[in-house]
Length: 325
Image (cartoon, rainbow, N blue to C red; front, side):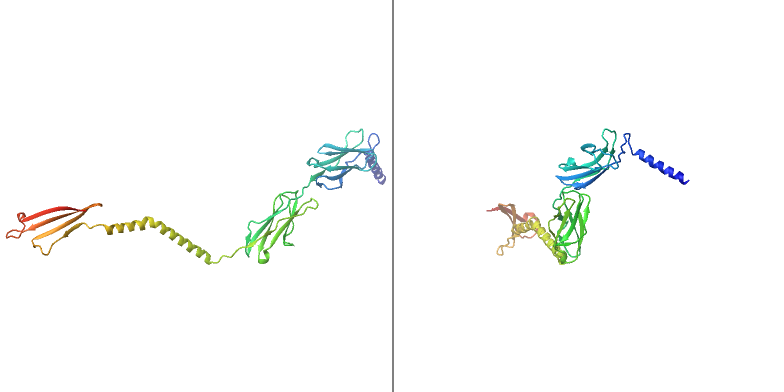
């Protein structure tokens, strides 16, 4: 039984050895490994990046080819067991993307492909802007501050300060949006100059924002609304009186003045004490036109005789009209 197990183990070892050899006696290539040996995958313009490609085990010479998006970039032949090194200079956006390498023997079909590495371009961030929906605050009020850098490669990390003191943990934004913090104005010490800073993976690229200050809002007294209301009421009264003058006061004044200057119309008695008691004179004053006036007066003479005083034959009636200049 033990001998049978040894024979089976030996058979498996021989089978693996046969699978590792090609028809011409060379060892079969494994999938190569593509690794970064110099620089970073997040690069800036004019930066150099070095990639290494190696298939092991393998029997040299081996041909290594570097591809970007299935397009050949460079190829190297290695006659030893050392990796192939590819140095890239990132000069434009077209140099960004996914890279792979292929290992194969010369004059042979097929080959093995490596893992992929993605090279991305990083841009420096612009100066962040610190802002708030309100510039005035009072004690006991909640306020917000937002910090935003318009340009720069993501992610971007923000940090808030008051003076030189850090007032918040770092906020890393994976999207192009502002970092926001909430503050509670508890005392006058919370008024001062606030700032924020931003940075990303671009080397030596920390930028500070503008300074922002909250101003203390004036506390309104309880009497102010009452004073404002009284002022509005007084203003409305003045406007109402001004409008009433041409429509009510002036017409009323003119009507009273006209009534006081208008001449009387009616009958007046002009009895002279020295005249006979049998004569009575009545005068009638009538206004015909504003420019012209006249007087109608009648003289009625009655003689007392014996008999019926109501007899019309015993009464003499004379009327005359005279115009006044």
